[in-house]
Image (cartoon, rainbow, N blue to C red):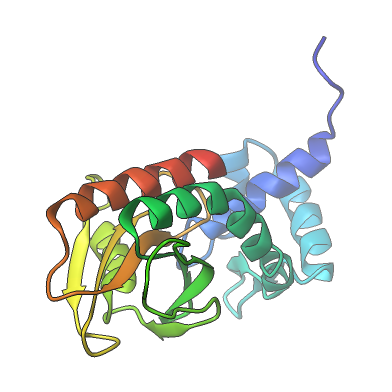
Length: 213
């Protein structure tokens, strides 16, 4: 038996998803056509969402995602971190390097989860909360590669000495996870990244993506 659901809530959530998928907002008429409901219903949905700051309307009347979603978004990091930890632990122990999950935060790459290997004599110190520009370091560049090639798997990205002298990194983007833009990678003290590390990082990124779907 199909569980009883709320049609109004379903429509409100669909409005938010439609607005999240556009950079320029949508008019009442456009939303009405996409939802298959009349304009009066859309007006009511938008008024309710606007009261909770989940949407805003510009001077031209186009609806856009509101700042209220940021308060909800702050709770995403702990959930993503928890889902990613098993794959990160396995990656860190297998490679013998510090593994990390990095998410986009504005124009920066933000490390939200870090796992250090337990058996190595030394490894790179990396902490959750560390941020850097997206165009520096393997973690950010892997994310940018996925943006540039949205219909393909860009594989892994390698960097050397971009964030810390003597340290190199490998990272692969999270693919196919709605609402989450990030990468999984490792950072190590080495002149070059060993050959098998790239493929292992891609594997770990796929494991994290599967856990988040």
